Image 1: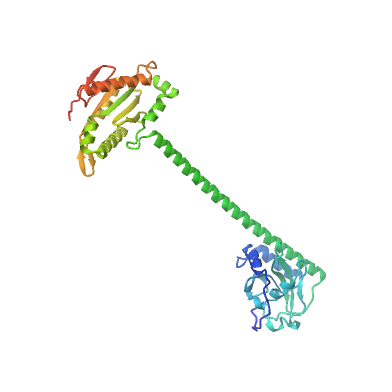
Image 2: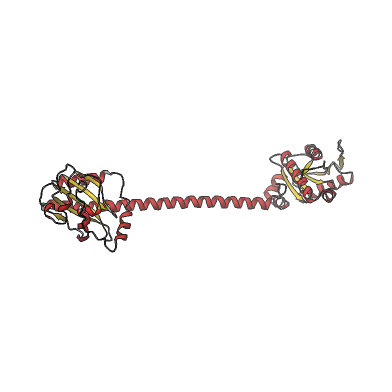
Length: 385
C-alpha cells in the first residue's frame, strides 16, 4: 500500500493495556529489523495461495504500522491512523480472519485512498491477526487486491495457518534471544568468577608471601626458615649432601641506629637484603633471621666454597654505601659465621649452634671477618673499614 492521499484519520483509541502490548511487541525485537528470508517466503506464499498481488506482515507500533515483510506493497510503513489492520485488530479474535470484501464500500476506509505498489486503488483486504501467547495483538499477515472479492474456504484456512506459523517464528525468535541473553549472562558470570578466583589466588599468594617473607628486605623470614628446618623431606634432602649454614650480623648496628636514626637503619638492612638476593644462587635459601642478623643455607657447598662466597658477601657489604633522605651513610661491615654439615648426623639445630659460635668468635676477634666454625680459625679480611 502507498501512503494515503487523504489525511482523514480513522478513530483508533488505544486499549487500556496498550503499554503492556507495546512491551510484548518490543520483546521480539522485530521493529526495524533486517529482512529475513523466513518471513519473506511466508509473504510470497500468502500472495500465491490467495491469488493476491499484494501481501505483508504488518506490526502495530505506537504511532505507525511497520511491515516486517511485504510483496506488492510500498512503502515500508504507514501512519497507524491510516492502517486497516490498526482499526480491525482491536475487534479481532484469535483464529478469525479480518476481511474487507470492498474497501471502497466501507465508510471507515474508503476516504483513505490506499493503493498497491503499482498505484492501483486498494479494494480488498484480508488479514490473520498475530497474537502473543498471553493475548496481546501484534499485527497481521494480510493479503491485498485491487478488485473486490472474497477468499475461498481453502485460502482462508491457508492464510490462518500461515498466521500461526508466523506466531511460532516470533516465539522461536524470542526464545533464541532469551537463550543468548542467558548465555551471555552465564559467560559474564563465569568471567567474573574467573577474575574473582584469580584475585583470590593472588591475595592468597600475597598472604602466603607476607607470612613467609620479611617486608623490609624481601627475604624469607625466621618463621619460613623454621618451617624448612622442621620439614623432614627438606632435612633429608640436605642431609644427603654437604651443605653450609651462614650467619651474618651487621657490625655496630645499634650504634648506627642511634647515630643516624631507625629510618637510616632500615635503609641499611634493606640494601643488605638486596645484596644477598643478588649474590646467592637459585638453590640457596636466604632469610632475615631477626634484627640485623641474616641466614643463608648453601646446599651442596663444602666449607672451602662456602668460605669464598662468604668473603664475597662480606666484601660487597663493606663496599656499599646507603643513601637516605639525601644523606650518605657507610660503609657498613658485617661478621659472618659458617658451619658445614657432616652428613645426616648434624641436625639443623646443631648446625645453627655451630654457626652462631663461629659468628661470636668473628665478633670477638675484631668484626668485619668470616669465621669457619669447622676449622676453628678466622679468615681475616684484607680490607678494613
